[in-house]
Image (cartoon, one colour):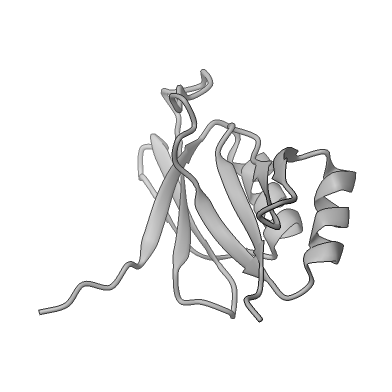
Length: 123
């Protein structure tokens, strides 16, 4: 028996703003979606060609208020082959929320407050 991680879900308040953020900040693209017939939810899966892991963005019609994501003690991590260019892009986007130069990493925050760790490739 084995288990393979396939996706992580984030509930989002503005689906289009979240999709635009993930496309620009991390190069993720929509690969599929599920929509409720009654319009009560839309689920969009985002991915890129570098991993088979997907990010699931869930929009709920009846939840227009911001999500309470607690103390932000969880995050999703991404490795980049061009850390300097990634840092510059995220700096221009104004989404860097925490940096740790000693560890060589930083975090960005999406429109709903979720934290994403940015790491360089291991050498």
